[in-house]
Image: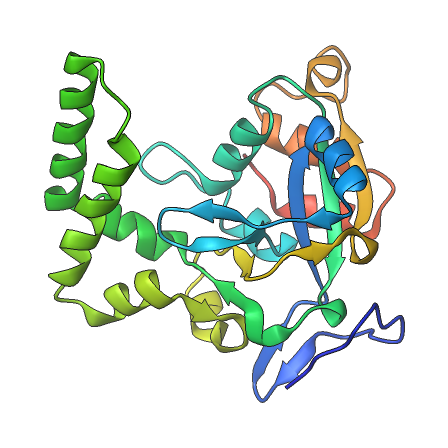
Length: 245
């Protein structure tokens, strides 16, 4: 298996696993306040997700711009990432991580197409909605996440489609993600370990409140405006051509 300690500057092409490729770089979006904390801590630490467990959540620009900006059930993965990152109206920071510095056995891809198909199935969606309105009517949210997790895993245990169940419970290793890419799934990359900040490169920062006051901001395509500004002057900026959101 491919494992390098430190950044290999001679690593010019995607890592090959037979017919499968690992991207040369993966990207992480965060707020400026959080980025400053990361610099002090020296580590990009794992966070926790309901389905995916602990990990550092990242993206491949090619995939996230082509597939994750598409609205599904009124939302898109890319739009939700920007909304969550910018919830305190803070500046957004884009970080770049060379995969040559990571252990490929710890890199996985969750498909938001599969996740959405499961979460928005009638049975699961109705059970979640019932829980939400119960908590709202009682004004008690203390155990909401815990009970939500119980609902999801109850339906996962009874999931007839074992491919969906296996993917959501175990995730797909990044080196085996070729089929998901071919089917144009919206993917994230999750690294199942903390990442030293010495491996991480800051490539962009944008204050969205100031950006909205400039000619560079297009109200009809706000996400594209944000990423054009984030990636201005970088090789990655050309990837924003795929964005129409």
